[in-house]
Length: 433
Image (tube, rainbow, N blue to C red; front, top):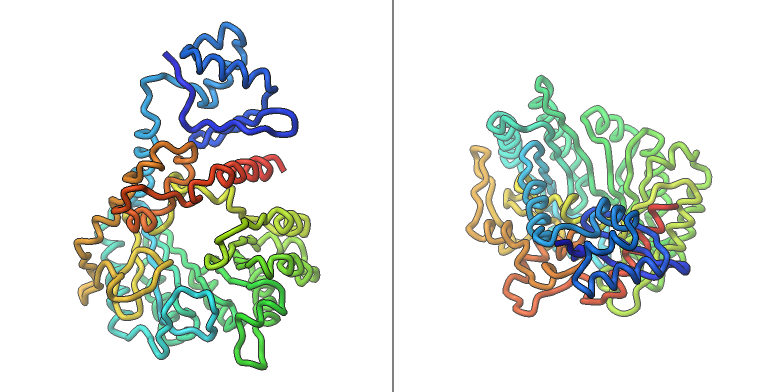
């Protein structure tokens, strides 16, 4: 007996029908009559009988995962993939918050900034002990990542960032373990001297945020009432690109400033296209602005692609099983400036939200709540029945954890099937472009 995959979606597309399987991530564009044959065989409970009417179509559907053995448990297959990805111990993803202070005060920022907060020397040493223990005790470790977050991590560049990078490089320099580092920064405090040091200490990438074109950005990210930050940040992004750094240029937008975001591409007209390829443009609607009508980013992605940039779109970025969030993984931790330990960086770094504490011997003592959070996936009933489960899976562990006690379940798309279909169509459009 055969069945049509739970993860199959069919959508009208330019007079044809687009079939998509979210587990195999395969598309098939077919004539409507073939879709009708598939539907008829499904309704008759005789999917296997389709091969008598159209053997080639049946064979292609089977090959691409659209039809499969009726006894095959697709949801369990997704769980197996997820568990394998999240339990991989060959990599460790460590995030450091040198400070929770910031030189900007963006209106939409979810973080509670703590002026004057700075990682102390003994905490820096404890972090390096933690890194050393992971290197010595994890015999399967092949890659160690140290990312910097905050707050603005470059505020205490000399006091915190430099000793951590020097210490980490020293720990891994005589081993076969690859060490890498990256930053999430507003980009304002960068210069050539810092870039030279960072490159020499295995920093290969940065995420830097813009808030629309200059006029909009400078209303949100400013040094003071008379001094904006846009021009300097753009200049520093270009400098990074010319130095071979990989930059994710995150563009935060609202309904009010979205059109202005297209103008940002023009401010890079003087940058050679070979350097633009070092910049990945990533559009994000500010979460406080997400209620109501969805803004299509297609006009902006088209313009930036034409201008020579790489693009990350929500449709292609959605892959929460095979490419799950760093915080979903067993081998990940975020150490705050005060030694408190977290998993997720998208929530306030308060003591109540912490899941553990870094001790003086370099070990992390996790709270009991840590295990509940790590085991939060696959408890949301609507996800287990959803056609996009292999891609979305209800978001990340943090989403799942926050809805564990929600009897009705939740959906990151608000149970809106139209939004799901839009994701599929954009994914197809970008795949064939």
